[in-house]
Length: 558
Image 1 (spheres, rainbow, N blue to C red):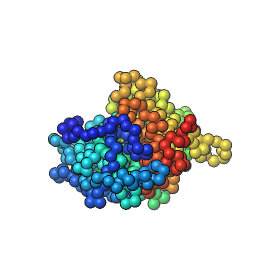
Image 2 (cartoon, rainbow, N blue to C red):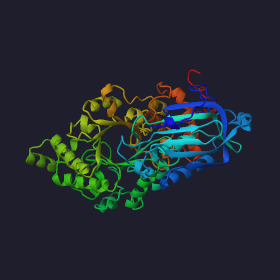
Image 3 (cartoon, rainbow, N blue to C red):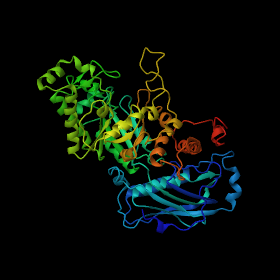
Image 4 (cartoon, helix red, strand yellow):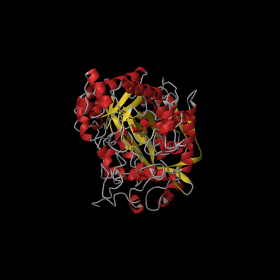
């Protein structure tokens, strides 16, 4: 990345002891150099876009950044909330503009186009310089997506006290690039319905692309409990499978959500889980699922050995996938309970007729459905059981999501597959809420205990892998399964905990090269949470406010 010729020599202090509570960037940049000079935002501050033919979504992003700069009004998280900064502010110079430009030779494309490129080909890096003398700040990138990432960092640098927006850290020099290409948030909107407005809010504000640099929304849109997705070729699935006509994602809803996400630097990877988690399909095609066993109610899994079920599923998946711009589509494949097939007449009849085993039939089903997706230019994504339990024949391009345990990553990587880290023992946001099944008053959730932000933050994406396997790790995500969640509590369940994985997979390490650690991260995450609240997100507190204003004072060994 040829940014060096744009950088000016600044009197920077690297690794200095920073004023308490002001270094609040999340995720922490790849390189970060700061000074100790106060710099105010001018009342006439503006963003100067020096890009010929700049796309409309970049202008929208600039307008949004201007709004946040003027309206966040976040006081520093110190005792007095900035009252002690008045002397420094009295004589501070003012910053009048931030100039945005693309590096020489960079193509000018919309953020929304850059956001949905294949993993490994998106350019998200940027360089940001804020001089201490009040001269123009500069933001340079190789793409509009990189500029978008830099804008989110710029907004996090400033605080507010009595009508003044300022930083105490000038001059500031940042070069930043993600450690991993995939940084996701998973949300299940099938067990309980989330209105479109709540999904947009989860994509918006300080939550995903705009601040913590998450770039993939993993949308688990159907399950055994409901089928709320309108599919043009199979309209009866939603008519019969949604909780109500009002609780349906129409084709226009999906298109709007996908476009809204892309403009914020987020790719939408949809999941229709098969052949398990499909009981609701019986409401339309009663002969397709067998309903004797399942991992949770209601019971029902596809009779995947039957040719008509195989062809239906391939047609369904491609009907959905072909209208989505993402290169990735998840077919699930988890928690298949084989007990239901042992005494199923139709399945046994088909296996006897073909001489196939159940495993062979599942292999044929997967090759058929995946083949149809690949023919449309999609890369299939599956859960880990497809590799570890069933040893299914998969395309080498298939991406495997780790969920049962972080220990399983090594076995999947050993088969040569690229992986997304979403292990339940670190990243499942629904754990710890107690049993949701009735008539079990002393029951606990299967993945107890509650996964704190700090436990998630200790996750090592490369643990137990060989150095040669490191490149197979695409990134990871935290995910919310919604047996006990809905629009009423999504903010507090997800935020700010989901920021943990965002930093793990963007930063990878501290700017000094040291490993990420909870003690250093906590004051910055406090800041993220308070900024979320300023923007209307009901993110839960991490500690009493007394602790948030006094970094390290509430550590267990303080």
